[in-house]
Length: 160
Image (cartoon, rainbow, N blue to C red; front, side):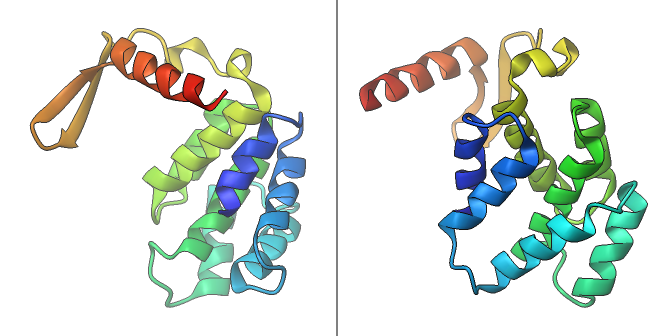
């Protein structure tokens, strides 16, 4: 719920921190996730790189599973704060933090894209993948990107 709200807010704001704060309005104010997110937004102001981010969550969440929601939500926030307006830095720093980094980097990238738009993402991140997506879906090992986009657009059109 939190990151869905952040991404939705991202399309209506020009500031990543604003989107992260708006997302807090969609989860209970007194839940542990909200507490940890508020902590990350404050702690992230002084964190300079992935090493500091990793160490900071190790101290706060010592012993917690590496795939726990709260720990990884904080890393996602740190990645966005460290990377700022540089998409490559957002992704690189977030991945380098470790833990559930495929999810944290994908979430950070989604938020960045919603807030900053495609013009802020270097073309080498999305151009020319030979129109191919490889999957682990049974009996569907690959899809054409054009087909995925067309299917998505058809579903989105049904909503409007």
